[in-house]
Length: 195
Length: 195
DNA sequence: CGCATTTACGAACGATCGTGCTATTTTATC
DNA sequence: GATAAAATAGCACGATCGTTCGTAAATGCG
Image: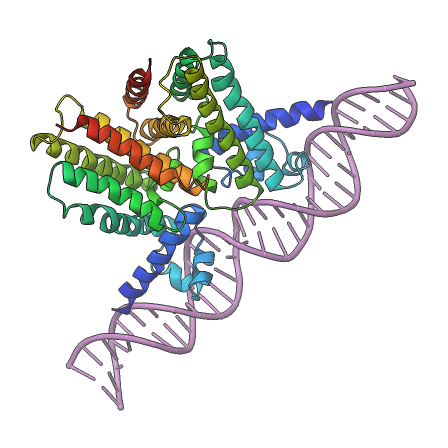
């Protein structure tokens, strides 16, 4: 089936564009022009703009997991893996995996007050992501690598905040030191909790 | 002049709406309907959508400074004022000063890849804000309240990241503990640097 | 009050939005 | 290679976008 392949290439481009213009700024006609295809031809793959947005979020999630989470899982569970996730996140910003900055940071702030299926999906994915961070912390504690008097949710909150802060400083403020700053804060915090 | 008064009330509403729908999602017709006035009547106050966006950013900045910065300046310079700025920020999120969450967090992520006058203005304001944080840190050091081996830019980066993280967790994830988590992280970090 | 100025409105423009139809082209199967 | 199915294109729709313009109403000053 050629349809599936076309659909996938549409979504890859949609993810890139949405990271720049936002999921609402994403336009069916504009996306079609960008891909040199007809509006109706593209539209037929999704049936509605909302379905396109949901599919775009899904494609972004796959890229996100592939670029950040999966590589870090190669590190042994515990402190090394936790650190690898953090480094992976910062590298993902530096490499510009999404041309407009972290897709999910942008989508989180775009949809935090726009109820509907897209918000629901973004929220669930971010819950999963924070959950993955918490799990990595908990495993580091279970392995005896990390002090147990710190709440995994608390540490996951702080690490994620530093990631978003790095994205903000790097993409809006063009602060070339942003990633180094985030790394320093992450490592200082983790090092202090190391047993 | 009645025009100025009308313009101001338009902008107050525009700020609220833009914090929910975004500055691009803000619509002249929609804003006019919301205020029970004509599209062209409202339009005449600004002359273009971009001017409306710029004026909205300006109005949001005034509210931001009035709600966060000015109150904190009543505290004596040094550690008390630095802590007051942080508490003021968290309180500003809890109180819902902007109905859709922090206007500037949203605008920062919306415009971080949209070059133009609006991005320029948002960037400058955020530079000013981070600069104000740095200044508060530096004053705390000069007063002998804070260790001098920490880079003010580094600490300002970390504090701002925690603020954005709190906004994210509070508004998208509906995490009622978000503000408490941010406060804990802020206070732990500042307390550790206190002399 | 009268009058000049400011402010607001109504209607309309071309462009673009998402979406629905029908026709044509391309693909996959026998 | 014929044929059924799938994929894409073309065209048009109503709605809404930002914007313009001419006119009416409201305002403020003497």
